[in-house]
Every structure is written in structure tokens, then in C-alpha cells.
Length: 487
Image 1 (cartoon, one colour):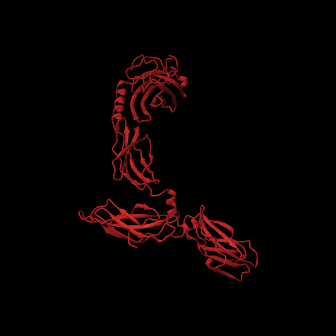
Image 2 (cartoon, rainbow, N blue to C red):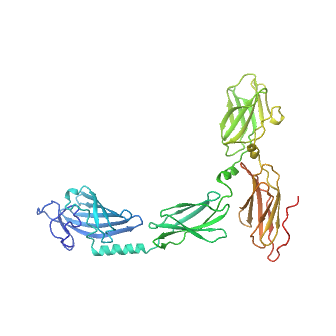
Image 3 (cartoon, one colour):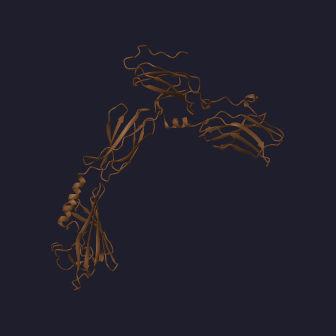
């Protein structure tokens, strides 16, 4: 190093009192030319470097000999966005004492790679009493030429190397028009990601998401449609390989509708009443629902109308009644509810509080009838599966399905298809009055299997009987017109 290094590598800790030799910097901890044995610090015996989009990290190692002997480490973090560099300097004396100083500089560029100029923003640490210079650290200014050349070469390699490929891409249907994507960001240098989307039967299209993203919701998609995705990392015009392909289908209906379809919402049954040892009336029933919010219990006497008695939590199967009038006949019924929807009522049960007469009977046999069923109650009644499902091959690429509607409370039908060795998948959702479905774009001379089920706002039916049919061979397309199935 040259004698013009007035502060030198360790100006941050101690005073420079004599010229620098070719192998180190001679320093004195006294702050004056006291004649004490000098300290010689050898610069940058080794370096470490790490580059990313967020920071450049440099770690320099060396050692000092003399009045203070021991290793030192300078850790540098350069932020390309803020153009600030921070240095943490640590000297470990062999006598067990540590000297530290911390500096923050504002620069026109990365001074460890370029000839950028810097100004000191802040400096602190327990070695400030030993400082000669009022400037920030001098490591960028006095990097040995071979060290700077090595840093520049590593940075050039970093800039010319493509980013790492994203891992474990996954896709799942979120709604009727949305698909959720997640992945693992395996790169520390990307400036963004490119996602390739391919609609079933279509051509790929690309869109971009910001760096460091690990999820994305693709919107404005088509209903009940299969989409396939791949993703890659981008960096300054360089690209990683594409990730694995992930596919998902948009939902056939909204999340709320799907939740309702999976909800089993049937009336409680086997309602009974008995007197326990504490002379309390205990109601028991069978819970036939899953996903109900709770149960509503009503009571009356032979001369009064039903009134609400209690509301109990979901999954309940019993309720204790402590307050009642002696020698009185009570009649009870119960229904499940979810939000503002209710199942039909259970059977009614009567109980005479003299304890001499208990009688369970069906509400249909009583003079006092339950209120007329609302539309939501009608929807909650169990659905029967579609009847007499038939399939007919129309050509080498199309098949006609037909069936009979046997329920009044149907909101629509779901048609599913598979080939031998595959699982069923949904291929169509139809309205409540549909009884025909034409399946097109099929393969010639191929056997297809079908099934269908009905649904409404709160439940769904069992599947129909499964049927199979084979498309015609090529060249054997029928010229007959499609007609409705026979009654």
C-alpha cells in the first residue's frame, strides 16, 4: 500500500504514525508518536462475496500484529436501491478485548466495484475515541487491485448467470372465474416472474408478476374450464427454465353454492321425551345433518300454537327442560337450521307432566298442523337422482344423453364423464328443465362412461345409474337428426 494512505485500513480504530509498508499498515494506539511498539495490520487476507437483487455483501478478513494483535473482520452491506453502504468493523485482540466501529455511507454507486464517490452519513461504535479521520471507512478507496478485480469478475459472473428455476408450482380452483397459484421462489436475484397460461384447447399466453412473489390469483377466467400453468424467473433479460406444469379447473359454481351442495341438510328424526331422575323433561333426537348452525325447538299445548322454546348448538342430540307446569300435556317438535334456511320439522312428541303418559306420534296424524313449508324448506327436502339415464352415439365424435326429471325442487343437473381407467370429471352444468345433453369433440371408437346428479341451493341427489356407450368408427357418422328421448 502507498504512504498516501493517511488513514489506512485501520484508521477506524487507531492512529497512523509511520508510513505503510508493502505488506501492512503501521499503527499506534496511543494517538501520538509515543515510541510504543507499532501495530501492523495486513489487509484482506481473504474475502467473501454474495450478490442478490436486494444487496451486495462483502466480508474482508485480515490480521494485525504489534501492540494490539489479533484478527479483524469487515462486513459490508451495499443496498443498490438506496445506494447506501454500511460497514461493521471488528478487531478481536488476542488478550480478549474487542474493538468495534459502524459506518453508513451514501454513494453514487457500489464503491467496491466502481470508482463511485461517497459521503459519510453516520458513524458510531466503541472505538470512536481512537479515530483519526472524521470520514467513513476507507475500504472502498484502498482495495488492493487484485481484490477489486476478483470482486468485479464475480459480479460479472452473477450478472451473466440466469436465475434459479421456481419450484413446486401448484394450482387450485378458487372460484368460477379464478385459479390460485403458489410456488417456491428458489432464486435470490430475479427481477420478476413470467407465468405461462394455456387454456384447454388454446394457445399459451404470458403475464408477469413482481420479484419475490410466491403466489398469484389468476382472474377473469372461463367457467368450469381447465387451465395449465408454468412459471420461470427473469433477471435482466435472462430467464430460468420453466417450472413443472400445474393444472386446475375453474369451479362449476360459486364457493357458497359448492358449500351448500356438500352440506347434508335433513330433518331431525326419532324425537322422544322422557322424565329423568331430577324430574326434568329430556328431549332426544337423531341428527341427520352435517353443517347445520343449530336446532330450533318449539313447544305448545293442545290448546295453543307452537312457540319457540330453545335454540341449541349444532350436532346436539338432546335438550333438558326444567321449567314446566304440572299436570299439563306439552307437544314438541324440532328442526335444523343454517342461516335463514330450515329443514322440515321432525316428528312431534307429546309429554304429560304428571309422568303417567308419554306418547310419540307423527305430526301428520294431529289436528294441529305445522306451518306451510317455505321455499327454503322445500329445497331442503332430499333430492331423488335423475331417472332412466340413456346414452346414444350420434357420430364418431358425439354422444347424446337423456333422462327423466322426477323432483320438483331441482335447481339443475351436473353431468360427469370418464373413460376406462380414469376418474369421473364434470363436463356440464344444466338448468332445472334440462333432460338432454350432447357431448361433443370425442374420440372415435372409444367407450365413455356417464353419470348425472341433481342439485339445488342446499343439497344434491345421489348419482344416477352409471351407463356406457361407444362412439362410432370414423366414416360411420349418422345423418339422423337429434330428437328428444321417448316418454
